[in-house]
Image (cartoon, rainbow, N blue to C red; front, side, top):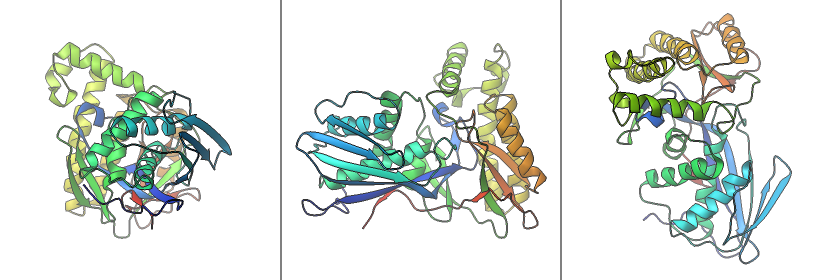
Length: 353
């Protein structure tokens, strides 16, 4: 086990940072045992934990100006950000990590509902801060921590996400994207050398929520497609067999198959420093997410059009969809809109000194 980094003497607060993430390509493939290519970003969520009343947890969402108090022994489910905190406390204790009375507060600068995974940023920061405050080591293999964080999101918040966001946050590496294989959880860094090109995100203005959007419906459609095809995962789907499925299941499967192929094509493009090809893959991914997976909304389409009008070589919806942000790749001559935010690969989640 790793040493509990950042843990101090009693009474000394512990802080941990969880980054947001941008998924370069490979959307809605993670829960289908597929491939994706995310990277952690410099924006994220910081959690501070200190000693509190015995047997109690008092949590403050600084950005919201809200509080929550509950018993360590009975962290009942609750909506919104409270579900993340209560779920993390319950899951850590259930995994054999005893916690004492604590006070915690968190704040972040990653936009909520923008498709940059503020939820996973909060989850991993909570996990690392709570473990460090308790003087306990994090798991040797951070994949185990990713699974625990995913259980919080799935079982306590009600969003049936895969492991993409948590793995990106826990394994981020400056200057690199991560080729993730969600079947065997292989993680391969891929240098993201853009030269004079720029990656930016542009908020569509339509906030999304995994638990409240069509995200879970898409997961259910994928499960139905697997049942129809007699396979465990869409990673095993064959294009010819998928073509015989009823609509919209055939289109959902076609997206997953083709999006997996685009991930490896993007890796090849990055290895060859072929950013024009990468831009075309972003466009193709967006068209597939719009037409085959049907997760776009008018605000997103207008934002893609605005990015292209400003000179973007490629642009696509990023994140779970039904709102959120657009990721755009600009060549040297392009000029991103004023509200665009430059994104670059940053380090992984960590306990702060």
